[in-house]
Length: 122
Image (tube, rainbow, N blue to C red; front, side, top):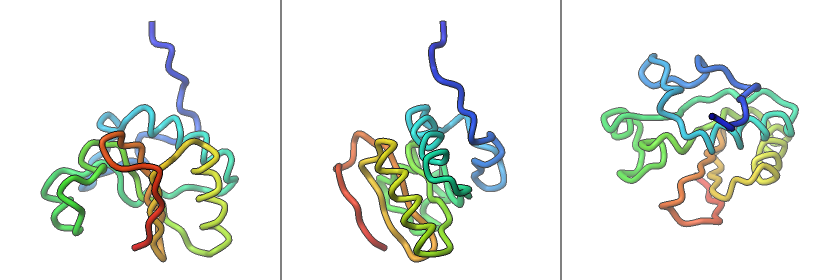
């Protein structure tokens, strides 16, 4: 019996790699925490990067051990400092311990193989 909570604030089509839906490659833990964070933030989360294959990861300058390669990370578009605050606050409230802050996006991941808790800037 599957006891996992249904993800309600995201649709599979929001998670793409090279134009192909990659929802099935995403970590359930990541999706569940993102689902809560989106509700807490009260603002839309536009996912700009989710799972990546190795070639795509190289092309975008991702680290060789990127959490995106394992489906445990996403990048969320961010357009203002107020929106950035709401998203980061919601991510922390929802149990994210790995957050990267860029000028136009916020990286969030749940990769247990990488150092945490950490917040970094790009």
